[in-house]
Image (cartoon, rainbow, N blue to C red; front, side):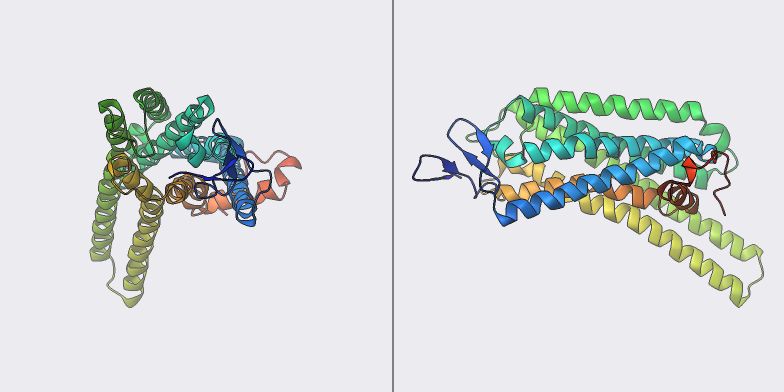
Length: 334
């Protein structure tokens, strides 16, 4: 894909990205941005702000309110920190040094962008996996849950998540991760990076999460059936059981559905992109990349807004009530 040559000798790369142009040595932001370019940056800017604000609410709530100091919420806190850093670091880097320009003129900033992108997105995915493990323990073994999932165990899980994410991010960049096509033939290192990277950072954790949530649903359904057998078989109890099943099914469908919807298209594209004879257009790859990043914006809604105690905490923070006195010990389950 070659950019078109203009009269003054500057290469315009609107076919690659509507906001960039090239002079054969580097890619620069166009001096005359189009409506499409401006609209894209306004949208991405709002996406970044929403991601930062949403995850800041989660972080502030867990740190400030003592009632939320639980092992499960510490995992949610770690997830929120990873998603916050995606909004603070990856979004601006991706806007300033787009995927398109990095594909055609890779430099140090592009490598830094890719490193942050891979490490933080992997950390977010692994934290989601840890949350699913925590929820499975809570549903499957409720009597021994508190003795097994202690704060110490949770902190170890968090450290392992961040350590693995950093190693994957650094290792893939060193190996030569490629989001574009290989001009002739991919080297072994690049091919391995494009296969092992997605497997370690997405496919393997995703399979674990799907299996765990399926087990959670089966265990929850079994427990509901057990409760139904030991209680009065009235119409009211039947309606309650049915409602519980629908709610559990809906929650798990939203959690896994949004995760797979955001992540799967990009990671499927990444695996086959360097080897494809006729690869998808670069704007398609870039759109899929932003769809993946948008999962960091949606996580606070999925893992926090579903809980009424988080909603109470958010309400107190947004209205500024926490600045009017000491509400750290407030009851949030009202």
